[in-house]
Length: 283
Ligand SMILES: Nc1ncnc2c1ncn2[C@@H]1O[C@H](COP(=O)(O)OP(=O)(O)OP(=O)(O)O)[C@@H](O)[C@H]1O
Ligand SMILES: [Mg+2]
Image (cartoon, protein in one colour):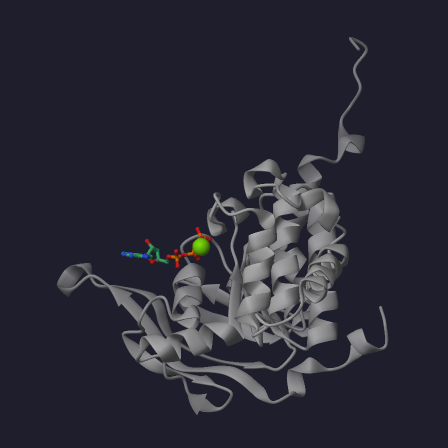
């Protein structure tokens, strides 16, 4: 790891803060809390993982952070001020600061837009409309080479002509051009193989170091969270049962739920540990 990567991002200025943030669904007897009075403080440049099992409320929380779903209670502060997305114009302004990558990259694109226009849109969104053709070309080439894609091979192609791993890298090239303050990534690596997963995670870390963006990484995988994050928040039934620096929480877990998530990790590998398989004479 570089010197830069060792910087303590957990002490930077607050970027996104939640106070008693809550989202319930249903009414009366059927009322349930998908996100139940959570408090958090994500700092500039911090790599935060939110870890929890299916149904724990991760996506509901992400949608509230993105401004796609209204909280039923509580407050979100963006850069220490109450987040205001009450008008369409204010929402657009907020979305310039916050971008998302989702599990299925194919769902995030308009499949009828060629890759060049996907990237050009990003340059325009950042106010680059008046740049020369050559400057725009250079920016797109740089963004592609950051994610090990060759822009020349992508021009005139449609997103569906790429593999899942290439698509996910194209998503990261977009982020490279957009340089948002916050990136929210909801299980971005679950559709790709282990090798692409490591590459994608390394690219995200590099982006964080270069651009200083806060990354909110949503995952089921506590092992992955340990490997990549500064801070982890452990989510169970809509609540944060534990949070703190990744190594402190994972090497010294306090909550029973965290302990269980950790104890599930080696089991996955044990199933594949072929050295324990007895070879019989029939073979
Ligand atoms: N629109 C909705 N209407 C009613 N219930 C909902 C709605 N959205 C989510 N829920 C419920 O809220 C709870 C949390 O769901 P959520 O999608 O946030 O979980 P998750 O942690 O993202 O799960 P996964 O890991 O499977 O993606 C679930 O019980 C779900 O059924
Ligand atoms: Mg989800």
